Length: 47
Image (cartoon, rainbow, N blue to C red; front, top):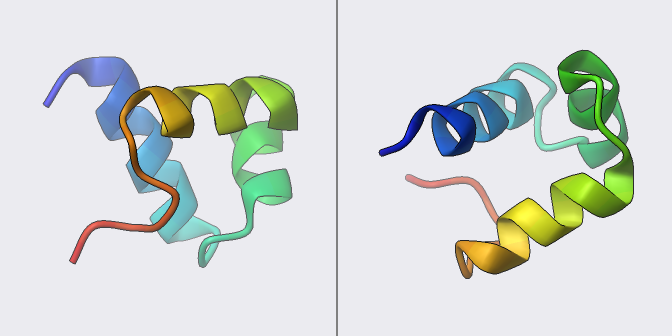
């Protein structure tokens, strides 16, 4: 797992899946977060 992808999923876990809060924590826009998730083919948290 690359560092960027790991940071995104950890932020989503810390923020209970809330993309708005996770993007704020990461300092990126919600659109950028959505693009990163779409690039990986994932819209939900890993199990």
